[in-house]
Length: 361
Length: 115
Image (cartoon, rainbow over all chains, first blue to last red; front, side, top):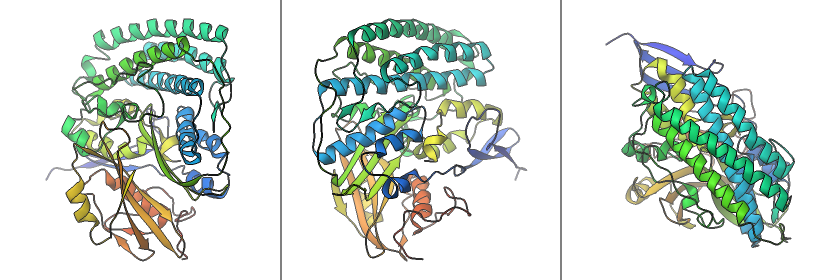
C-alpha cells in the first residue's frame, strides 16, 4: 500500500471565500479520499423561523440567508405561504418576480465565472467580469432601491412598481451586458487558460449525476435535464422564453459554458419581461393565517432550492425546512474530487460555485 | 404532493422498490417535531421533468428510535441524514453527529425530545 498524506483545503484558504473545509487524502498528487466540514457558521435560521418571527416577516429573514440569492430565498418562502393562504397574485407581480430572480442568476453566474478566471490565474478577466457585473447591481438598485438585500418580494406581490422610463433604461443596460457576455463566450471557448486547461478536469458523468442527485449547472453540464423552472407552473417561465441549457462533457469547461448560456437565456427572459410587462397592480391582499403543509421549489443560481412549510393556522409556523443547493450537492462534490490532482482542487471547487452562507443557514 | 406512510421497519424496502435513480430525484430528509416527543420523519422525492410530482414517504417516530440508513440505495442521502442527526438528536444508522453543529452550540435545536 502506498503512503498517503492528508492535505486540508480550508476553512481559510486563498482560493476559498467561505468557511468550508475539505480534507483530501492524497497519494502523491492524486486525491483518493475526501472529507468535508461545513458547520463553521451555523446560524439557526430554521429554528428562528418557528420561534422568533411571525410568518409575514419570515420572507425578510430568509432573504438574509444569502446575499447572492436573496430573492430566490424570499420568493420560494413567499410562494409557499401564498399556496397555504390560497391566494393568486397579479400577472404583473409574477413578471417582476421573474425579472429579479433572473437578475439574481445573472450576477451570481458572473461571480462564479470571475472566480474561475481567478483560479486559472487570469486576473484581468476576473476583474473584467466583476466590473461588468456592476451593471446588473445597478439594475437591481434601479428596480428595488438596493444593491444587495432587496426586500422586494412580499406576501401577495412585490413592494415596488416599475415605470416605463426605468424599464427602458434597464433594457439598454441589459443589451450592454449581453454584448459583454458574448465576448466572454469567445474567451471561454478560445483562450487556452479557460478552455483547454479545464477540459476533462473535475468531470462528472451523466450516470454519476443521477447517482448523486446532482442539481443546478453541475448536473446540466453533465447532460442531466434538471431545472426547477422546467418543473413548476406558478411562475410563467416558458411564457418569458425559458430554455434549459445543457452540455454533455461534465467538466469545468462544460460548467462554464452552461453558466454562460444561462446568462444569455436569463438576459432574454429579462428583456421579454420588460417588453411585455402587463398593466395592473403589483400587490394583492391575502388574508388569513397559513394552515397545512406545503413544499415549494425554485431554481436558485446553484440549483434546486426547496422550502417545506407547515402552519397550524397561527402567526407562528410549526416548521420551516430549507434545503439549499450547495448542501445537497456535497456528495457529488466529494465524488468529483476523487481521482483528480490536488493542484486542480481549487479550480474544481470554484466550478461548483459553492455557497456556504446558504449551506450554514 | 403525495404522502405515503411507512414504518421504520419497512422504509428501506419501500424506497428500494420505489426509487429509480433515473426517474426520481431525492430531495432531502426532513423532520417535523410533533407533540408527545414524537417526530415525523420524511424522505422526499421529486420526479424529473414532471410538474410538481412530489412523493413524501413519512413515518412517526419516537425519541429513542434508530432510523435505518438509505445511503446504499440513495448515496446522496448521506448529507441530509447527518444534518437530521444534528438537528433532531435522533440516531440514524451509521450517520455521525457533528457535521452541522459544534460541540459547544445548542444541540438538537429542532427536537421535541426532552433530554
